[in-house]
Length: 457
Image (tube, rainbow, N blue to C red; front, side):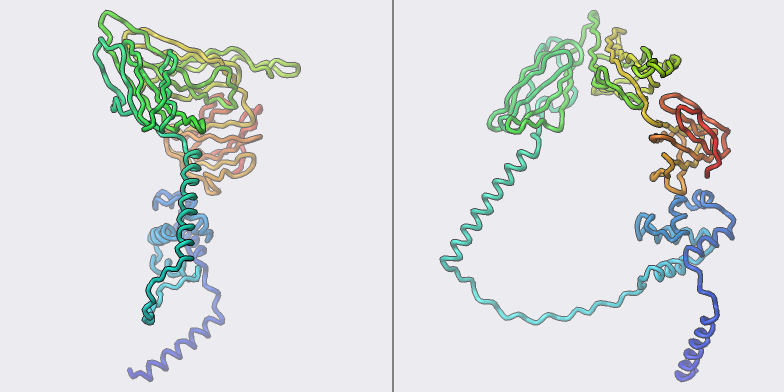
């Protein structure tokens, strides 16, 4: 075929294509093609999510053309390629279609670098008295600015603190040792505070070079020392607290009771939900037990026109292992009312030390804890009638063992794909699962009314 024949054939093909384009329906958009291909395959978004390992919310965004919901262009290309292969479409053609709809060109013309003209050589530097004066003034201004910047940074930044002796966080000493010398560095002139449970803190001042030294008393068992620094000019305390443990062996014939410090909760604290944080530290202890005793209703309950609730079930005690640094922490679920929390530390020899904290729980609005137990479940949640932004309009699949908390002023509504593995705790009261495994249901929580099953999807 000659060049002229090829040209005629190309022109004729263009005209025929133009003629056909005048009567044909407009080509479907990329989102429409993806939706139609999935419908032909006969699967829903959640089946496609399980097969492609791409979240249903992202697949839904591709089928709606809502690319702003996707993580970025690189992830979008990967999602389109994998989804196209799954739906039986040509991935390269799908990516080209996506680029065309975004107005992007696939091939970028090479950039031609125009050589720059050769600059004429400049004249040598010349110094005049005015230039020297300006240069000196500039140096002075920059030095003054640097000084001000250092002062601002000093006042804005808290002091640092370091313990150089002992360098290790946990050490053992001889059983005859009754004192130990702690050494470290901090801001020059800073006040170093060394606190230990059950005793007044030690305080020393750092020298001009920032070095500090303090002798601390030791007793049998594990001794805990928390070291912080305070800038005397700004009053700021160091962000970091350095903890050291020094253990003095206990003779077999001597049994030492554990020491216990409860940092949370504070005495008399009122909580707006039932997850009470319990945290602290203990020395010469192998375990800590947290328990609670119901004292009575809050002041609002029992007032005129307010019914006195029945005593709630008392939660089971929780046994915690003490970490290597002596710390322990756990959330402790309590229902509404006034409670006494008891924290008990036990030594390896069976000796115990205990502390109590009185707290009150007054729920405000709706506090719903959702726990998935026994398998995975798809969830979609509305808080006060609005979709939860974390789960999104398409919902999300929650793995076994995960716990989610939703707080609303008036209501929380939950759509679950497996009612039997979705367990609820409403305002501190465990409700358990409200349906059977594998059965999708929607439940509306509007306390004080009991949960109601709805048709919302």
